[in-house]
Length: 93
Image 1 (cartoon, rainbow, N blue to C red):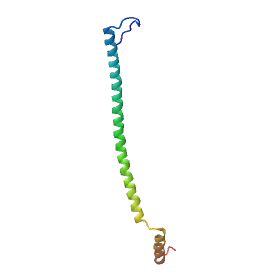
Image 2 (image 1 turned 120 degrees about the horizontal axis):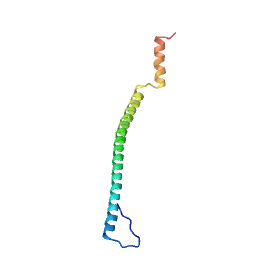
Image 3 (image 1 turned 120 degrees about the vertical axis):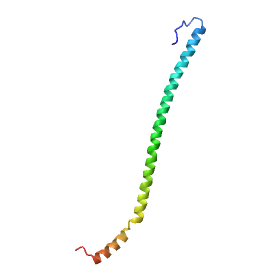
Image 4 (image 1 turned 30 degrees about the horizontal axis):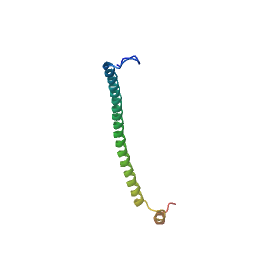
């Protein structure tokens, strides 16, 4: 802890040592807070990366399903032609 001194008094070695120690202690506290915050940010980034990987996987699965639907789903014209054939042999009335 830094001691108070007379502003008009002489600067002593004791006062300088006290002032330097105070600055070092304060910087150490700031550094610890900074490192704690950095670790928190890093942990959150890891979580975000895991979620992003999962979302990317889901997007690829949806794209695959859409592609499958495009190839497996008949066009409106194909459906009407098939329906006409079915109705001819199996009328609904």
